[in-house]
Amino acid sequence: MAPEQHSSGDELGRFLRARRTRTSPGSVGLTPGPGVRRTPGLRREELATLAGVSIDYYTRLERAKETRPSPAVVDAIARALQLDDAEHQHLRALAVRAARYAPGPAPAPTRTVRPQVKLLLESVRPNPAYVVSRGMDVLAHNPGGLALYAGIADWPVRQRNLARYLFLHPSARDVFPDWENQIRGCVARLRALAGTDPDAPDLTRLVGELLLKSPAFAGLWERYEVTGRKNATKTFQHPQVGKITLAFQGMALEGTSGHRMGVYTAEPGTPDHDAMLLLDMTAAPVGPSPSTRQR
Image 1 (cartoon, rainbow, N blue to C red):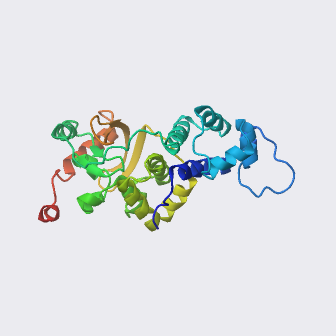
Image 2: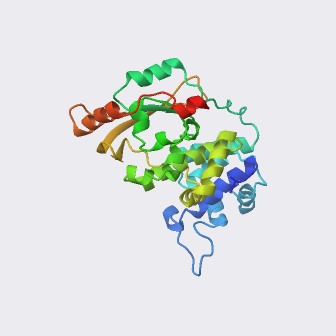
Image 3: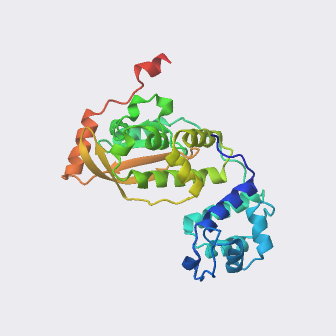
């Protein structure tokens, strides 16, 4: 199964339909009328009324017949759907792209990590740390940063991707006690990225693979959520060091095509810090595997 091919207007309409059908009348102060509602969530006419636009205009938006909604209309629809800040910004970005006055395409993704960044990864040890691409490919790491995701080192370097790990690695459900929450946040991030850059080859390949191989991913992808619960801490049930809860901080790396660094920390003197130290001491050193060097 490949990700759907569509125009900019199609993506705007797809997002509006997904949010409308998941918004109940009661949540926006409407009292459902008598009879059976064949439409889940809000009807088009209900949302149009709440947003102060005509039913015909809103219908054309959902069907990609209208692709230049004004910022005021976009904001009114966002308020009617009670979108949070991230969802509101995503809707604005889709509207800009549909109107074809979006800025130029994003820079082509690269897997190159600067030596200074690799040095930074080493300098934060024993804290596990890694660098990922915008599509969650693991591009660089210190020993603990890779070892924390138990089993991912068994995969070839090019296959190591945090989204792929969550959905396709047999160890992921055991490693993450809150696996359901983890995968929701993962898909929301990919949905947001793919919505505003749907033709990006790196995202298209990853999404196509996960749609084909993971029913859990396919179900969440259809929901079109673009925000997930952001936990300040993550808990791992690690086969080598046991249960370990670490604070997490992610940060964008300037001058890159969407690269981000993730760093885990623990308070010194705590069992979690001791486990983190043990993980760093026992993890395999950073470097290409023999099989990678041969290739």
